Image 1: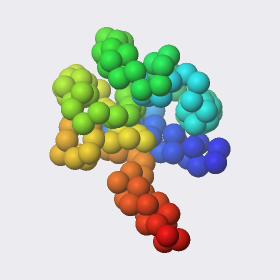
Image 2: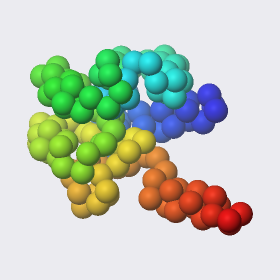
Image 3: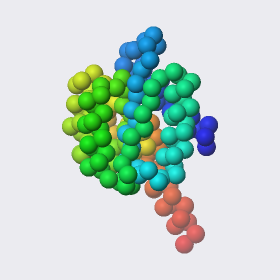
Image 4: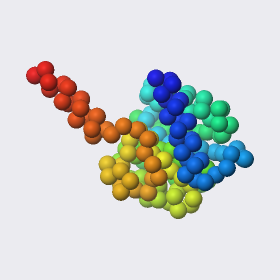
Length: 153
């Protein structure tokens, strides 16, 4: 699991650098803004993997998340605050179909690449300006799980 998380985080950082057309000459700053609360164990593993990747790539990395699980207004406010810091790239989750569209577009317009991880806009790339999505197809995963559960009925 740790290896998968580390590979995913490294892929995110490399994607942001490549998509942003940046060179490795300077130390870059990346921020991951999640919808998950501070107590979520899945995101604790992602955080540790991201910290390891940041060390390997010699970049500054900040992981931002709300205190409470799913506090989307707090996540949105954290995204706005992150824009004021002008990082070199943002990785985020999109847990609401429209709430993050404007702020993601604002980041892209500012020249800050945004990649989505874990939860994407239901419309994918057509739904907002994010540059890429890294994660599973949650609709397909739900369909597969429901199919497996109902096989025994």
